[in-house]
Image (cartoon, rainbow, N blue to C red; front, side, top):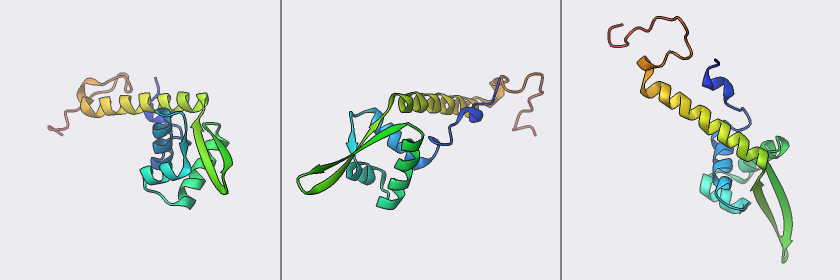
Length: 119
């Protein structure tokens, strides 16, 4: 069995990108300004992270003109939902290992566990 950190996706496992996917998972779509404000990031920083997510197929981006103003709408894709769920599941396993380290031998078959308080 592999350690759950091996299942963390480099395209997802980054603060802004994980935040974007989490935010988008609960809405039909969100505009750039809303995402930027919610995640407290800059235009350039968010733009780069959105490009990574789009290149990976985890989000889709629609650029439209509303009146005379350009607006960017961002939507999570099916692949993005699957990747986010896998990331959350791996993180839950990691948290469980931290919460109960002495009871978790799944990733160290045949190993001897030393009680940290006695080491």
